[in-house]
Picture 1 (cartoon, one colour):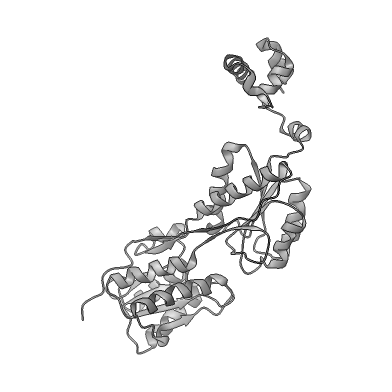
Picture 2: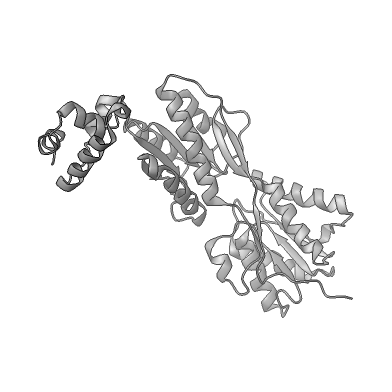
Length: 347
């Protein structure tokens, strides 16, 4: 490996000066710009690479960020992870990613592993089924700067980033209402998920404001812990067997929307001509479904970027022995209109 001493010998400057420039040390601004450019030019030509391990020992900073992901294969996680990486890349922070593989029991093991590698902060992409307050309290008890993405926090001293679920479903139902739909069916999410409650509140509040009746006979609910294609498909079949007519559907997420479209199509109802459908999430496949799905985009990359921005602030404060209050950011979702919705037919 090329060392700072070799760069100094080749450039003609002292080891101290070269070290200050290459490590961006205190007082580097006092070194003439031409000198700095000359040192970096020589360093690049020789192929100098900083010894990050040695640098971390000197500065007592590892320049690493732990990222805990509940399921690395889930598109929800991968989009957030991209936002995190895009944000921290210019700062030189190195992410260490751990995959819990949807197994709650792995949380403690992964956390201990990250802390054992002296990460300076942690971002946890939450599975609302498994990441409870007791687990989250581990972050504050270990005195580690931490941000949770995907879980709204109130009684835990940990920063968070979430999507505004209620605002998202308001966009969905308003879109259908503006298209002239008044007879709508709904697939609600599981009661166990906070997201389900918030999304239903958004729908109900808009309906109340405009005087839109929600027919209880056109409301079905996912009973499992998570959405499955089969259950959403069967729930749509159940709606079709009922006597109440509907011209549009709002579903809990994109997976249930795709299942609903399949069930409607099999029953001979065209989407969107006979029934418009709106999902929630904007998973990558939503744009390529048949028909392409109108949905609510969670701005997942933005959530990742915001989480990284917050944890960087917390890490800098910790390095200076400062204490910052937890920060909570709520991302406004976006309506993405595609081909699964159209104006309601006139009676």
